[in-house]
Length: 173
Image (tube, rainbow, N blue to C red; front, side):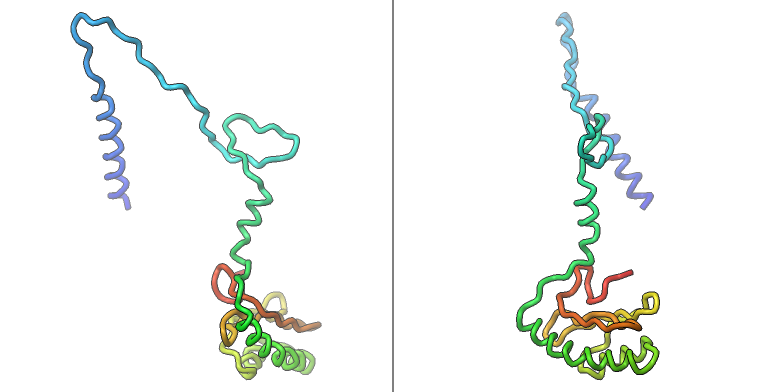
């Protein structure tokens, strides 16, 4: 990596120095012409959030902080799935809901018990994790998409949707 930086640094210096040698020398006896300088254009030096009623200082590149935050969370959004994939996943999700609800009400919930119930329902091995006592799961549907949800001490949620933009069925923490 350091070698690449030295090579690039050398190339930049060579380009800069060669630009200095490009001007033709003045012919003897010719009047000197003043050097022309390009008109200075301000270059933004910082990104500044746009706030209604506040004028930004010079050198700021404005941005919308709400839009930036929404784009930052896009990795959690789910992709679209076909109607066939949704129907196939919903069929398995419908049979999974009562199984998980019975599991929740009969004993303390555990990752192993929820994982086994999901596999017994005909779905594959799920992505699964505990989150403050809740068991979150996500598993690929039979024709694409995902069956995902949570088992808590109070309720069970099972939903059908596409994979998340980040990949998989269960968003990262």
